[in-house]
Amino acid sequence: MSKPILIYDGDCSFCRRSMAWFKAHDLPSRIDFLPRQSPERESRYPQLNDAKYQGAVQLVLPTGEIRSGEYATATALTYLPGAGWRLLGHFILLPGIRLIAQMVYKIIAKNRHRFNCDDGSCQL
Image (cartoon, rainbow, N blue to C red; front, side):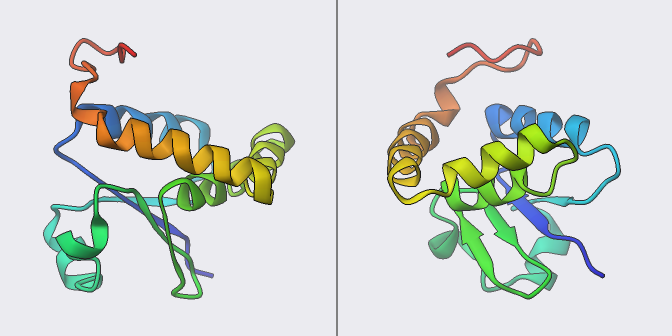
């Protein structure tokens, strides 16, 4: 069974820290991670070009379905070990909650380059 793949902005320190958090909590390695700028992403997923990417994390599911933004993030949480993370992911996917998550995600994504993560702690 193949793993889902999170594709993120490798030029964004906030994004890299976010993926480091996911990797630290994904101890059985159920998710693969690829920077959007990597040659591997370009060759495996050329359809996820800059126009499609639009500043949001992308999750490619084993079925080939692609989820974006808060939908990708919440779905990725459901793959993490521990009932708490899975429950949180499913909670975010609830219709009313997802709408709020979408608004919050858009604000963070729009301002992600303003967050300073170079010293190891992201300042919000």
